[in-house]
Length: 235
Image (cartoon, rainbow, N blue to C red; front, side, top):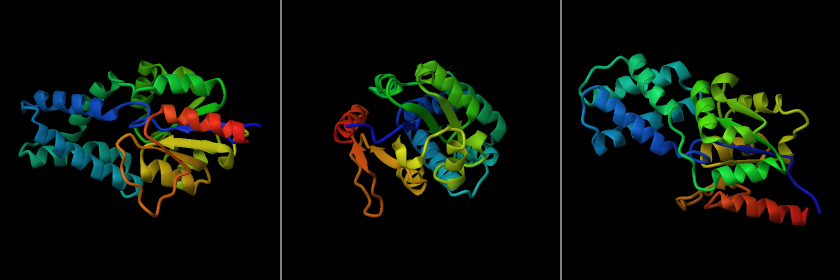
């Protein structure tokens, strides 16, 4: 008996932290800051626009600096209002920096993992914000290092991002690594492409596309511990 994995790579937003809750609060405050009522239809519009920008970012079609400002120019443009993208981004960023809503079981899982594996954070996002939110949540004390796309100069699912990460994880091989994340594109396909084992965190019970084959699928974070305990008994 033994362990199949030496390291666990954990995504942040949508996996350990409830980013949707932080995002909704930040956009609500931003709309009020610009004198607009925080209607649900406005929040939905921002989510749609922001998601399209991040998908383009994952594909390497837009730089991070342009993403974080142009999304707000387009967003407020749809609402018939002119806004300075950089000013809107700075206000919104300050809201995000002060929120960290833990997903159920996240802190408990990280504490359990830290006693048994080398635990690392792999996340797309803005470095200053991710570090602040991880510290605010208490997750930071359970991980050996944090790899943010902004620091890497590339992002999940790009191979360059994973090369950056593994170059900074001494003695850790992709085939001895399990990546846990909620995104089929950036986490699951990215991890598979890098040679990692992958676990899809799927709390919403979304259908799995035929072309994507994660090693494991769990509806709760507690399922990750069960998989690793069972795996240790087998190996």
